Length: 189
Image (cartoon, rainbow, N blue to C red; front, side, top):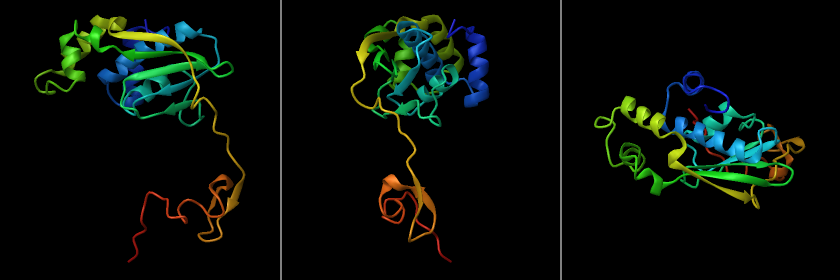
């Protein structure tokens, strides 16, 4: 079971949300299950994921924590780990893919470490290996969140004097785009 769902039910939810059953998302489901049980399933939890790939979706499917409501934070540290923590006490559980434990599961190890191509390790075999391994490839630690536990509150909205668009006042006197800190460049014809 993964957070009260059968593996098949979870994989059906994954297909609807993510588009397909990704191996990392399936592992992420087991990670969320461990963390929820360790901190208490009725705890008002926030989440931190340490990879932008697959893990955010596992958290969003299995908990009320989403990027949109601000209860999920992505710290792209490149590690396959998640933390669920009590938003009031900051006590939580960090669950991670344990490379030592992965050695007993060569297909998963070779996939995760990029040692085998998708052609040489079909997804069906990899998913089967993950379903067989379940939580045996994961480890967890009880932790206290000391950074990134704060919730980002919306600040006052004001109008930028340069572009005339609304933005959060916490950005300063001009919006980030007009400060040159945007992500795009306008195409002029």
